[in-house]
Length: 123
Image (tube, rainbow, N blue to C red; front, side):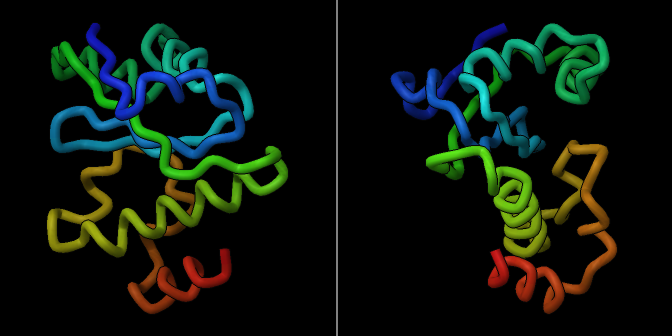
C-alpha cells in the first residue's frame, strides 16, 4: 500500500483532524497520537472502515492530508465534526456525503445545508 502524505514532514504531528483520500472517496478522522501511527491503524486493523473499503475495492494508494492542527486534544471531536460538515456542504454538488466513507456521520447527513453551515460557524 502506497501512502502519499500531502506534506511528508507533518506525518508525525499530533492533535490533528485529517482526511484520507481513496480515489473519489474520503475519510475524515481525528487523532491525538502521531498521524502516521493512526494511518497505519486504519490500514491494518480489520475493524477499520478504511481497511474494509480498501480491501473491498482493491486500492493500492491513498493520499493523506492534515485539515486542522490543534494545540491540544480538547477540541478534536468538535473540529472533526466541523470538517465533516464542511465536506458535506461543499461536496454536495459532487455526490455529497455519499463519497465520505465514515460510518459515523454524527447525524450530519440528516441536517439541512443551513443547519450544517450554522454548525460550521459554531465551531
